Structure formats: structure tokens, C-alpha cells
Image (cartoon, rainbow, N blue to C red; front, side, top):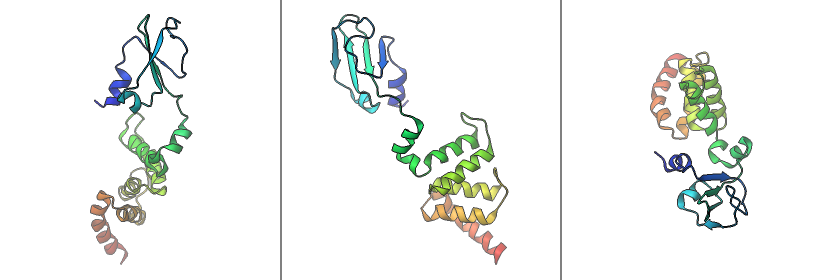
Amino acid sequence: MPMQYLAKHNRSPSTLTVHFVPNECPHCNCQRFDQQELSAVDKLLRRQARFQCAKCFTKTVVTPEPKSVSEQRAEDDRFLNGGYEYLLGNKYRKGVQVPKDEKKAFEHYLASAQLGNPNGQYNAGVCYQQGIGVDVDFMMAYYWVGRAAEKGQGQAVRLMPELEARFAKEYN
């Protein structure tokens, strides 16, 4: 299991999580409340401070306020190049955490492809080639898989010779 999962889900019952720096113990309201050094796990989870009460031994962890989805998207690089749309496409195509819906999967792959994500471009091309969530359109399949192959996407590079041979056979 990843360390982040364990750190988030395996807390002792005496650990409180707050979004502000307290001036007294949130559990017993005493002043014998000492700040502790942040561990590597705390830093990984972006915690701001850690305290322990000398009276009731309650541990308190200070975390930043949760960010809105738009703020998170703006700062996370994987959202900027269509990675978020690509991940949503995968979820809809496989039915993970959402109902399986090939049309929505295609829409997310296409949005990712238009933002320049090579995995989104490859998957949009495959959807066009196989008719997954959209009508079969070989020309669009060739276009999107070609764009992904130009960026070095491995599956697209392997699929291009087959598409080029079919394209030459059908359109020449």
C-alpha cells in the first residue's frame, strides 16, 4: 500500500485533524499543548503543523484548507495538458467509480486529445477506428493516432503502420 494511503487512513483514535493552528488542545482545552516536528509523511501529505497535548495525549494535525476543483486543476500540471480528461475517459470506458458509458468516455478522450495529451489522442483515434462511443470514421482515427505517434506515444507508434496500410488501400 502507498505510504500516503496508510498515513491518511491508519490514524489512532486520539488524533484530531484541524484546518487552523490552535492555541490550546482542541480535546481538553488545556494550555499544555506542545508543537512537534513534522515527519517526512507529514510533509508528503502537506500538513502544516503537528501538536500533542501533555495532559490528555491527544495528537492534533493541522492541514491546509481543501482547495476547490478549479484551484486544484490550475496548479496541477497533469490537468493542464488534458490528463484529467484522459483519466475521466478511462473511468467511463471501464466503468470504474462511475457507470460504464462509452459515449462519455469518447467525449473525454476527445477533449484530452484537443488539449494535446498523447494518450487522449491515441484513445480518441482508437474510438474512431473501432466505433467506441462514436460512429466509425477511419480518417479521424488516422489523424488522432498520427498526432499521438508524432509525440512518441508507444501504442500509437505500433498502430500507425497498420493504419497507414489501410489508409493507402482505401484512399489511393
